[in-house]
Image (cartoon, rainbow, N blue to C red; front, top):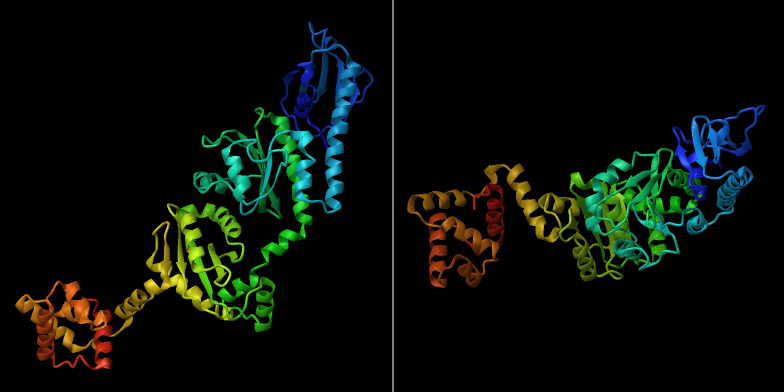
Length: 482
């Protein structure tokens, strides 16, 4: 790898260098002694007695490259030169070793552990979903701070921290340089470097400034490590397999053709049975908080490891086999995650045939329409399907289909200041249960019977006719005048 004057300034700190660097790019490949006949090459750093070039600096050695200069507090030029050679050997051995290990198919964890001697600080690598996939093994629980422990335990930062970081997470996805993160809600400053493949964000590496504030040289080294990690990600087939793991369910949501044989194979691999009841959950995030979709996705993948958790068209879906993950467990875990958050969830009716996944997806969607903007809640289709049907009838049905009895009752109520129209509605919606209807209307049973008889005498209705009752109930939905 190529070094920079900033890296050399850090490496030569025992010489208490005076640093005057304007560029400091990573261009250095070697070091030379500067003499009158030396041919200057931009990839070299040159050493000479400082007194030969700067008056009054006889007791120092100068290191120069272009317009950049280090003044070392020593007269031993040979020792300084050997130390610079050591820097080239150390960093090149590190980078070349990692490249060989990557070609041999090493793990990401190995790359971080093999970099400890270079950085000495806690390192953490996250994937595109902000899920922790590797960290410095020397820094386990209890070695850094409470948030580091949360991250190691759950695989991510706490949700309240992620919500505070959402704007930064959005902006940082387009940055290719190492950046400092100095949020007040963290105990330490840290350096972040996004990881890319074909201009697509693949993840990020973060280095905590646990022992000290790092300089520009450390940033350049982290950038070098980021480049090596991108090479590792390019060669890793594991990540590509994870991305396609639930593609069959996305196709079903989009009503694309999927063979029953293909689906059966997928369910068999997952250990699911056709006869098991399934449930589909759709989690939506308010648009202004979209940047924390991936952190939530990562958290859900960890919590619901027996479920299919995937992202589709900006919403998160959870496909659960209720035999392995009962509804009570799903609800409990979800409430713990969603309570006081900016997410809300729609839940389908239970079903068996995954091949018809678009149907429960439609149930989730209509539920979310009625729950729109209600943050932190779980909403069941069974609680909102009737509202949906009523709303559809009210918007699209021809008012001519409304039973004329409703108009008769409305006009009678207006003229006599009575409440027969609502009485009939409550009676119908409570399955014609006299006791319950009377209780809801705060009436004596005899008073309710009087009203019902009056309704029948005014309209000629036979409330014992089940088809008539159904017509009346739907008429209320169309008129929406209850």
